[in-house]
Structures are given as structure tokens and as C-alpha cells.
Length: 423
Image (cartoon, rainbow, N blue to C red; front, side, top):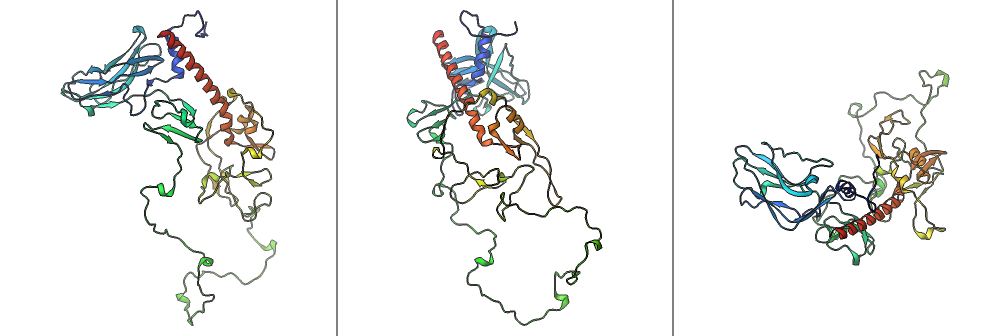
């Protein structure tokens, strides 16, 4: 039978089956964070040895736990230098994970790792440079190569933060309404508020940049300027035109030669869409507010344009809403959405200039998204699919994250029960 399912009661489940299961919800790596000492490899110059601290790791769904510092012997290199690797070696046939030194060939390239799906799998902890004719391994000869198991994203209050978190642990603090992470010594706000007084290294004064002033901004200027009596010779006049337009006259249309058969419309605007004098740049099918940044003070909103061309701001406060109810989103439909990379088509401006489209943009195809059942993410223009509400994609992802959180919680509970039975 080509389909296998497990684990169930009264069913034989192999270590290969469990390895395949566990590696899907925890990556291979050391149970530690950057800067930690779990299974850390080092040398102290006391002979041809390196040492590996105690610690815990997951290797292809199998666990390994060391309770003491282990000493490994490095073979002498002779007259040629080489690079070795310290590895955790998973051997299903031997039912074990052991520390081992993988000896490299002469040269500067470390040996390749053996990584087979159901056989030996090696996870590197460090590489060791063995110099020619050396009699001891120095601390500088050891370069760490540990990878770490993943951290889950959590949520908590200030009083219920995780105990003993690893570096990089990320979560949402409901007490402060901020995302924060553990930097090894303290919880750090991912988007801290920065004030001018808190900035360091700022200059005490600023040299004004090259700039201009409008005539209307100048104070105390005279109202009139009387030219002094003077004259100019024709030769002293610069930038004079080489030809002069004839005096006012007219021509009949039929008397004009070489006139074009068609005329590109001049720059103009339409009422109801833009106010008089306003303009919006176009970028091959999309207005490009992303090319501009805000400055100054106050509250800023993304620009919204209603179907009739009216500019507006989007609001989310409950004070603007009524008849609020749950909206069901199928996580499986969200996972079917197809991210793509594409090039914008070239655009022909009113003056005939070809504006090259932007390259390698990343996003979704509106028609595919609509077909997948997400019509509420689609913008329509003149009755046709036009754009996507990318700001609402986060709402669509919420049920996916919630389901994954439930699955992780369930799997952790199952793992706890299995570990309790094995202990």
C-alpha cells in the first residue's frame, strides 16, 4: 500500500516514521540561541583536542542530550594543513547520535556532510583548521557552525512573559500593545519610540543646504526698482535669439503644410477625480504613492480613492462600525494563493515617451485571487478587475496562523505525553 498513516493505538511505528513526523514541527539544530554555550565547541591550546560543552539538540526528529563537556581528539595534519568538522552523527542502524570528528582532506575546504534520508545524518557544530605540523589546536582555529532550533511566536502580558527565553524569542505583549523580543538580557521593543533627545551622536549645529527663496518670502524688499540710465550695444547682449517670430498674423488651416494627422492630448485633469491643479504620477498601471515619503508631524494615512475619484482615509475604530459579526475564512483557500514575480508593461506617455515598466515586482494576480474565493480583496475599475487590497491580506492570514498555533499546541501536548511515557 502506498499510503501510510500513524501513530495510532496498537500500531507498530518505526523510528524512521517518528523522525519524519518530528522533523516537520521542529527543525534540526541545537536547543539554544546565538551567543549561547549549549554544545559549543572550543579549544584551549592544550594539545590536539577540542572540547564540546554539554547541551541538547534535535537531529532529524531525534533528540540528543549531553550532560558533561566532551573532549575530542584531532588527528595531526603533517606537512599539509586541512579543515576538519565536529559533527553530531545520527546513525539509525546503531540507534545512536554521537559526537565525532570528520577529518578533511589537505586544503582549505571542509569535508562534506553525510545526510541521507533514512541512514546516517550529520549535523555540523564547528569547523577546525588544522595547520601544518601543529602540535596543539588554538582557540582561533575553531569556527562555530551550529544551527539552532526554531523559536515559536507567542503572546503574553508583562506579568506572563516566558521564563528563561532563548535569544530571538518573539511575541506580542498585550500589556504594552507592542511586539517585543528577548535580546539575551532584556525584552526589547521591536519598534521603540525615538525622541530627538534620545538620539546619540547628532551634530550640535547644521549647515544650511543649498536652497532658494520665493520672492514673496523676502522681507523688507523695495516695491520698485528704478533702472539706472545706461545703454547696451547689440554685440554685448547675450542669449539673444537667432531668429525672431513675425508680428501677429494668422494662417488658414488649409495653408499649413506638414501638419500631423493626429494630436496627443495635452496635460489636463478631470473634475470629480482630481481637484484642479492636482496630479498623480502613474507607474504602468498603478499610481505610485510608494515612491514618495511623508515628513513633518501629525497623523498620516494611506491614500484611498473611492470609485468616483474622491480621496478618503480608511478607519478601523469600532466607533465607526455597527452590525459587527464573525467572518469565516478557509485557511486552505489562503494557502492556495500563488505569489508571483513579474515585470510591469511599458507605458506610452501623452507626449509619446515610452516609460519602461518596473521589473521584478512581487505580488499576487488579482484574477487568480478572485477565482480562489477572495473577491473581498479585489478592487474593480469600470466593472473590471483592477487591483488588490494588499492591506487586507493580513486579515486573511489570521485563521492560518490560528490553525497552526492550535496544531503546534496539540503536537506539543502529544510530545509531552510521549516523553512522559518514555521517562
